[in-house]
Each structure stands twice: as C-alpha cells, then as structure tokens.
Image (cartoon, rainbow, N blue to C red; front, side, top):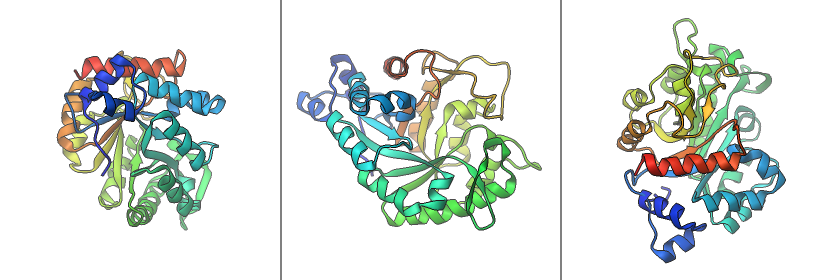
Length: 305
C-alpha cells in the first residue's frame, strides 16, 4: 500500500515552500489535516505542454507549489527518464495513466514502465474500440463506442487487471461522461463495473466528468463500496444542463474551489469509502497551467482545513 500523507503536512509544506519530501520530514512539517487517509497529488496531464518543453524544470515547479505526489500521463519520455526527474524534484508517483491500445497491444511494457516508476496503480483513462479478438481500433473512441465495445473492455480489463495484480500493481478505470450515456437502457459505467472483478478493476472517479454527466459522485461511493480507490478533482463552472458528450462536456473546466462542486462533501465521503489518492487535474486552463495547479492547491488548503 502507498504511504499516506497527512493533510496537516500538506498545509504547512505549502506555507513554507518546502519542495521535497525529505526536507519536509527533516523540518517536521505536516500535510492536509482533515482527511489524513486521502493524499493530494497532481495529474501531470495538467502541465503536459510545459513538460514537453522542460521536464525537470516543470517538475520542480510542481514540487515548489507543495505537491508531493503526481500521477503520470502517457508521454514521449522513457519511464527511466521520468523516474529520475521525479526523484530529482522530490516527487513520487503512486499512479499512472494508459489507454486501451496500450493494454491491448503492449501490456507487459506498460506494467514494466509502472514498476520502473514505482507506481502502485495503473489506470486506463481513455477508451478506444475493440474488435472481437480484443485488438484495439483507434478509429473509434469516446462517444462512438457501442455496448459491445464496453463488454469487450470488461473482458480486457479483467485479463489485464489480473496480470497487474500478479505484478503487485492495482489496475483501475477512469471514466469521463460518455460512459453515462444510456444504450438500450444500460449505462456503460454500470456495465463495466458489474462485469469486472473488484480485485482486478478499481475505479478512479473523475468528479468533474461525473458531475458534468449529471451524476452525484457521493452516490457512487455508496453504490459501489470498495471500488473507488482514486479521485480526479477539477471544478466545474455553472452549466445549463448535463452532457454525456465528451467534446461538448469539456466546456466548463476551472480550478478547484472556483466552481460549483461541493468538495467538502465529496472528501468526507471519499475518506469513509477508503479512497487513497485524489489528483488535481485540469484538462484545459485559461491561464498558464502551473498557475492553475497552484490555485487548485491553495484553494484545497482552505477548503479542507
């Protein structure tokens, strides 16, 4: 199990500008006090453009904000390069993202990369079509997927999740909003969870996308107890109504604490549900991404204090 980070340490690290976990321990600092069992991190997809320009400098900037944990997204750098840059910045990565084609076409390589990075979770965060032999078809994705695609994903997830478990890694699935579009009276999100083994397939709940689909994240902690290990947290501007279209639904991203989502309620339920990590992620930013990451971090200090 990943080492948990106390929220009081998170608060004080941010206040005094400690940038490495080692320095934090030396100074006896504390991190985010109210939910000691949910560690806060940053999904690096938020700063993906900055990482392409300056991997080491961007990771140092992330650490300087106060983040200790990050979640990786697929990129061009090798796992060893990313690992070394994270160590240099004083960051750890308990979780990483992949896509359908990664686990369908190169499952062993994906797991090996996660092991190099020292990750405990490996999460499929984007779905592409699958044929009957579970080969990926990148020409269809998101809203274009059929119920058969989701059934095939359930089969693929069970196979890959078992493989991950044997390697000491927990596999997970990250939904957006299109998984809540009803097909013949069936919501694909429910189908995936009902047809996958909880031992092999956990959930990373994206609170924005679930809320954007008109769903209540807290109700899913109750509906699927023990299935939700990770959260994505980004806020949502006021919208006129729900959307289950992934393109149309990506219209309301904003920094945590500046939107309409009730984070105190979500975090209270998340801790009771056994969530281990919550990663700030903002798919699109209206200001420099590192500034958005800092605004979310600072607002979380106030919201969860």
